[in-house]
Length: 140
Image 1 (cartoon, one colour):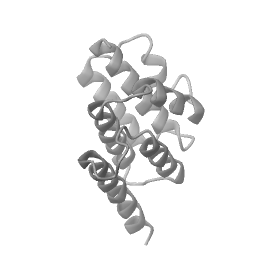
Image 2 (tube, rainbow, N blue to C red):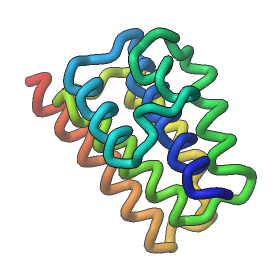
Image 3 (cartoon, rainbow, N blue to C red):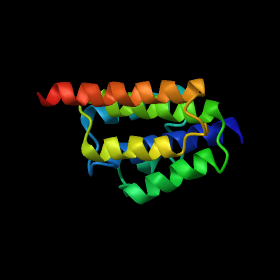
Image 4 (tube, helix red, strand yellow):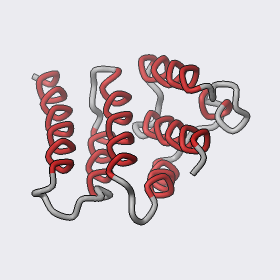
């Protein structure tokens, strides 16, 4: 897969994840625009309408893009990149919405490791536990 295509796919997923709770928060918007600029795709005609919220993204589309990005047999590297990027986005506004938590659970189901004894699995679980803990702390 071409690097630029991979970057665009990842950014589309992140934009979809930002929409997962029905609206993009200001912090999420800033994060997405910063990432798009850093990766050099902010002016891309495929990305612009999504980045500037001209086209809302439905949750089903976000899930479809995740599956497309990871494929049937995702590498641990691609999976880790996705979960790290997704975590940074979701945590950017300091609030984990129910829909965002569901998205992380769904992402965990796409984990390329098949056994919980593999090291990558534990790293992913730690990220999800950290997100939930942060969310719970903010609720109390």
